[in-house]
Length: 43
Image (cartoon, rainbow, N blue to C red; front, side):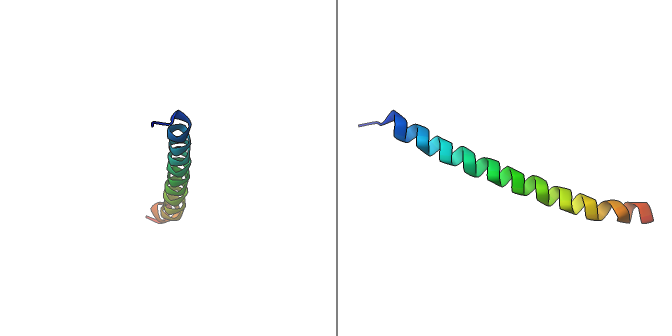
């Protein structure tokens, strides 16, 4: 039988993973850009 709460919990976990992944991606991009920015100034 289909459980709505189980479906909700699965989605919640997926969203949590998705947010974590996005934060990691953003912080990685930010780190890369903060490294690249001084190099652009040197150009």
